[in-house]
Image (spheres, one colour):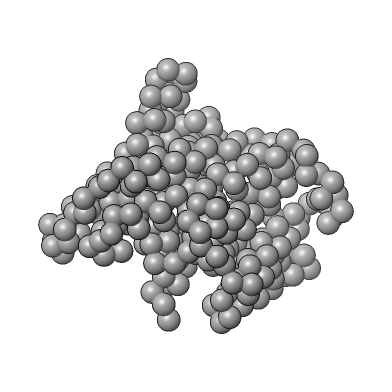
Length: 301
């Protein structure tokens, strides 16, 4: 088994934890604050990771270059935008529609990988991505009164547009981070991913903190009051991002993000096992499609 596969699955599991905690924080602070904690409270963990890899494992810190910083800046700003929009969706009554459209990220990453890096995906890979995306969108709207026809007609609703733009930004971020990590040229995928994570999270922390200072100072107090759960978000978020960056250094971003749809299976299993929620046919269908897409990706792509 290629090493990027278990790395991606673990990252998806950690992201599921981070997303759940971030949604909880949204009840205690605004969108800006809930977005900031992912980066600000994750920065110490990212810096510690680089220190461990360098001082304990002896990996050299790679030299950065202009290409690295160009891709890194694009990825960092795109990720801030995507995260902000996704958290914003929690405030909308029909946020499930927007969330479903945001899950088109793997398909969009395939497009941006082709446009930015010239990476072509095999037909079987594209088919696997399409199947898994269909499964995720099915689960996302399974507990609403929305059917396939109304889902398509809702394409121009505000939440749908926000979801699509969020997925676009996430797709751009994934491809940009892959390009940034690869531009370092060594010493290995672990340190390349760690350095990319550190520079990205430091930039994101300063950008978000500066924004709060200028536009929303009350959010700083809200963030400080919620420092305990914010630390969990920061740890889970930085660990998940390190996993994504490692996997995307080894494999195309679109393929990694397609496998990452397994996160929906984790979320679905949690709702059934922990919260004892009933399963409906659409959810079973959605899970089956995700599993089919992932198996197709791993066996044929």
